[in-house]
Length: 184
Image (cartoon, rainbow, N blue to C red; front, side):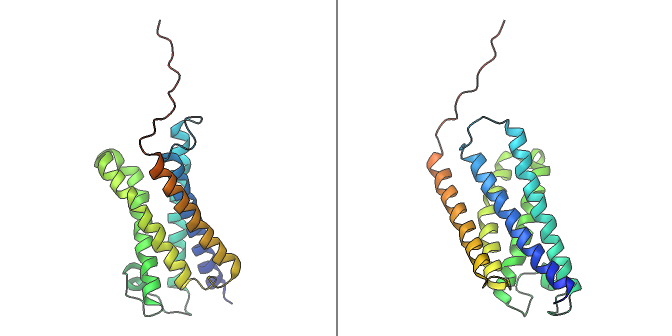
């Protein structure tokens, strides 16, 4: 087994793990499950950092695919959904997920320029990005048949689904009031 093949596998797993953690963190923040115990800025920074980490790992995954010669991947195969002859559908989902991670991550830095409504719409797309990454991992991941990886994928999907239900259920529930500083 070549070093690049190990990097492809590891970077794909790390990218999915960081994406999952970012989605979980984002759902936890937006559902107010944590209340206001920790300043929102700190919580958002963690969420943003997880997203950046997922993007970097995804880019490493794509570059390693370009370098490895076992399955011939060129720029078209890693950038265009459906261009790969190898596991076409599953790889296409991976390409879509990669573009989605890039768009959502960049949105952190252009939020004030695009407005809150556009930013929220882009972030809502993260659900599709997560599903695309999950389908890619299960369909193209060479470790997807290993029981621990299959359970990791299923557990990730279950946690995201449960937090999504919690998020929907908690919409409209007011946050605990912040203690106001006395005015003098």
